[in-house]
Structures are given as C-alpha cells and as structure tokens.
Amino acid sequence: MLRHGLITVAFCCFIATALAISGNGSWESQMVYSLSIGTICWLVIDAGRLLLSGNKEVLWPHGLSGYGLIALGITVGFLGGNAIGDAWVGAPPFEFHNLAARRMTSTIVITLVATIGMCFFFFSLGKSKHMQSQLDLAKRNATEARLKLLETQLEPHMLFNTLANLRVLITLDPPRAVAMLDRLNSYLRVTLSGSRTLAHPLSAEFDRLGDYLELMSVRMGERLRYTLDLPDELRDIPVPPLLLQPLVENSIRHGLEPKVEGGEIAVRARRNGDRLVIEVNDTGVGLDAALPSEDGSNSGFGLEQVRERLATVFGAQSEMRLAAAPAGGTCATLSFPLPAAAP
Image (tube, rainbow, N blue to C red; front, side):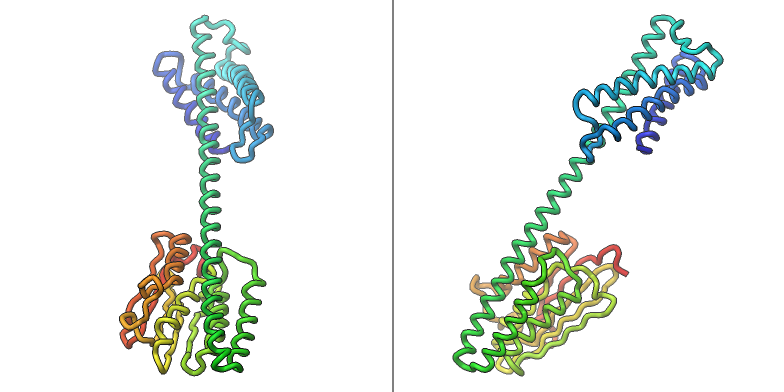
C-alpha cells in the first residue's frame, strides 16, 4: 500500500508540473490541488480494496464492487481535494462550481483519467505478482514431484541389488545371509519410517550411508573398508535424500567387487568458499577396468539419477565429476551452492 502511495504522489507531481507549464495556474496551487485529489483517491481506493478484496493474492474486489470503489474514490477525491485546494488558495469552498465550463471539464477529465489509469496500473501489477507466485508454486510442485519420482526409482534399485546379493549368500554362507537380512531389515525400518522429504540434514545422509555400508560389510566382510568424514559445521546443511548412496553403490559394484582383495571407500564433505563439495573415493579397479552396466556404460543407473537430482534442485549451479583417482580407483565429486543461511 505504501508503494502505491509513493507512486501516486510522484504521478500527482507530474500532473501538477504539466498543468503549471501549460499556464493553468501557479505550480504551488496546482501541486496542492493535484496532491490533495490524488492522495484522497488513493486512500479511499487502496483502503477499500484491502477491506473488500475476495482474492488475497490480487487484493482487488471483483465485479461491481470494484467499479463502485473506483467511482467512490474519484468522487470523494475530487470533492475533498478541491476543498483542500480552495482552502489553500483562500477561495470559497467548492469554488470549482464557478469555473468556466472548459476548465471544469478538463479538471474532471484529468481526475477521471488519472485515477482510472493508476487503478489499472495497480491492478495489473497485483495480477502480475499473483501470476508470478502461481508460476513459482507450480515450479516448486513440479520439482517436488520430480524428486519424489527419482527417489522412488532409486530405492527399489538399491533393494533389488541387495536382494540379488542376499540370494547368493543364502547358498554360499547362510549365517552371513542371516546377518545381512537383519541389517537390511534395520535399514528398511529406518528408511520407511521417516517421512519422504525434499531435503534433510547432511548428517542424516551420512547416517543413512553408514547403515548402507554396514549392510554391504556383512556381504563383503574384510574386503570392504570405509571412512566417513563430515565436519561438524556442515552437519545441518540441507541436501536431497539419497544423494550419496548411489555413488557408494556404484563404487562397490564397479570398483571394489571386481577386485579380489576389495578396497576402501572414503566419503568426505568440505566447504569450498560458498559451495559444498562432497567426494566419494574408492580404491577399486578404476574407470577403465570397471565392468560396464547393462546399458553398456560405466556410469550406471544410480549416477544418472544423482545427476538428475542435482540438476532438479540446483540447476546449472551444480556439478558432478567422475574421474580416475591418482593412486588408483575412482573419485566422484559433487559440488553445489551452500544455502544462504549457512555459517
């Protein structure tokens, strides 16, 4: 409302200046008349629209009530503004009755055109703001739906891989299969009991990753070693769920499993300026020696899903790199902006 008032005052000053230049009186008197009429019109119409509005976004009454409010604002503004102007210049109240017909007509026309024009401008501004908010809401809903879809695709993918490994262990090593089944039961209970959210703290992502690695340790035994490094100042940073597990799953499946002696996985988070960087390093067979996925590539289903999740949440500001580690193995690096409120 205050912004509308400031715009109205600026417009009234412009009208007063134009009238003074055209020889319709002194600049001072024209300014008093113009500001009085315009300010009263603005107060009546802007206060009325807030009281009568049926749309909380556009904040403008619908139908005849809107037109009636404009008519009321023009009438009260014209009469009240002229009374104030007459008092300022020392003329009798409502002196405009004695003006020449041409001047009287021009005064009424200017009031009508200026008020209606400003009302249309404010209405268009409010409607544009409402449409923009609706568009932003639609984009947020689309983003949420896309993230939910990606998550529902990732969880069954991980579960199917784990069940396939469990099937092998049942035949080869029943006690380890039972231990793995217990870990899987615990992992699924924690995962399914929590509500599906679009983001959770990075610490929760690392905790979930620890549960998954413990599950894989049952199957691989001493062939799998891992390190999780999360600085305390980054624990509360919000990230999309299931962001890191596909990277670790890819390291195990394509890096460590083909290697007879297995290897180590290290997951580290660090801050680089205003960006969060997460690295997943493994000492596996490396990119060149990794077994291809079913689609013929080494990237795997999970990595493509991670790329899509980053692109959905952070757009072009996110980055994912997959490169050979200097000491052998593979290094997957994620980088995206930190939230503005991050310390």
